Length: 321
Image (tube, rainbow, N blue to C red; front, side, top):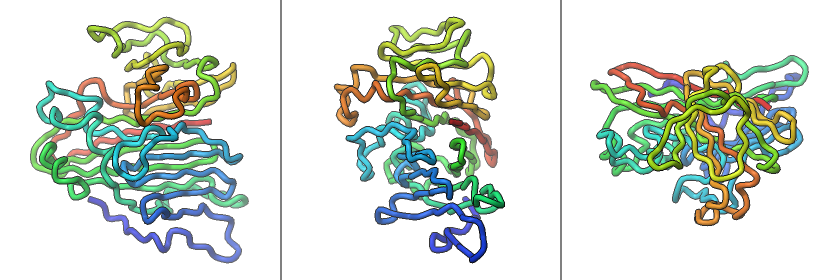
């Protein structure tokens, strides 16, 4: 699936006289990969699900919400961080190819391979050392358990790239059909963004946009108002922003911009907050943690992406601070 060598022992070469380099380490009995820039920004990626479970700025401030009851031992999908959704968003009982799969598919509950640091694609400055570092992770049928292979018996290859920069975080996915027949998929990056007070949060970039409200019965499609979105109750919506993927979706808190999300080939944005329903979720803690998070999720989940034999699809997001 990939030809990039896996050489964990050579991730951090340091030569006298060179500017400081990003440090990459494999920890927790080879179950996590961490990266730290010379200026202090850091990420930690759990190989189970290739889930980003921590992203901190140079001051050490955490930018992602991770439930204090999140299971990090590979027994279930992680509640928080940035889990990956593939090849189905939610469940799709009417879609034969994915009907038997668990909610949100198998990518978030499979152990990925760490393919190494992309030194040729990591940026460096002359004075302060590395300004970014790019890590690659891979998933193929050989990484899946037997049950998942039976439920989705297609030949595929995924490469997930995580780039930590001084001003933000970039995540991208390459999906390749390695088989001889076509198949369809959906993909989403389920970002749990950390905020201080959800009552002070507004989201712009979704104005006058079509959205599906998954909390209505039956599920309804409508157009959002021309004002920014605020959260005051349980929210579960799939937006197709009118401005397209390149137009920023901005999370503001207390009048100050906190996150800006720009997408590439990911046409939808899911906005989710469980509100007080969080108390009924066994892996969500603290119970009032919904006040400190908002999920703004870039994805291709409205309809299906189809790949013919040998074809490749790419998509990604940039979250800027």
